[in-house]
Image 1 (cartoon, rainbow, N blue to C red):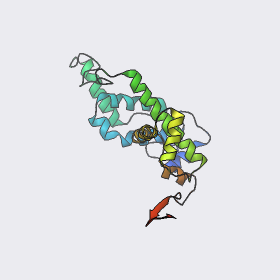
Image 2 (cartoon, rainbow, N blue to C red):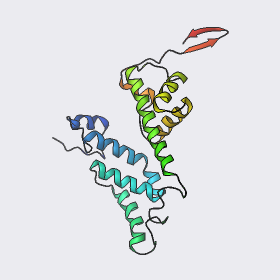
Image 3 (cartoon, rainbow, N blue to C red):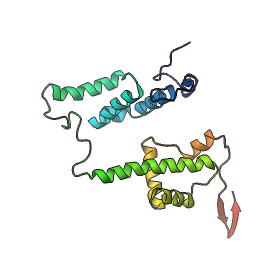
Image 4 (cartoon, rainbow, N blue to C red):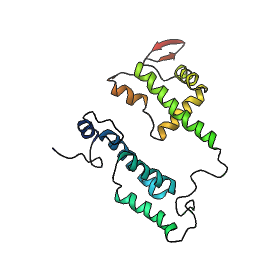
Length: 195
């Protein structure tokens, strides 16, 4: 039996190693965390210290050993304060301010919660009906559920996707085994036709 290594494993390897372990440090969660870290590596290395701290936290939450590149990024920033080159943890050369000056934390929390709610509502509807069209009616339905308008619900969902939260309609349909696209109406020369 080979040992599961989330840094080199494929999704299929993670599924095979899963064996019913769905805890926070299970193979599927570790594999997903590694994919997130690898996708964000460039941003973590070049970005601000908050990105580095989030990456370290993700490793801690999923029971991952930090890769060498993340250790280097973290220690470079940590040592800025340790060696007295920066006078505070929120110095830009260390870890930086987590949020912009004058940020309204309640508004940021509402936005964060809205992204999660929109993503979950979207997933719920497409799991129940994978062939449902992603249209204004869907966003109005989701907006009503999360207490937002249709446009705002769609914006929150798209922000969540950019942050790696949730799945696209195509991915969800693929997992559900749907091979055809949902039926949409198309207007051609004054006649409504199905395509």
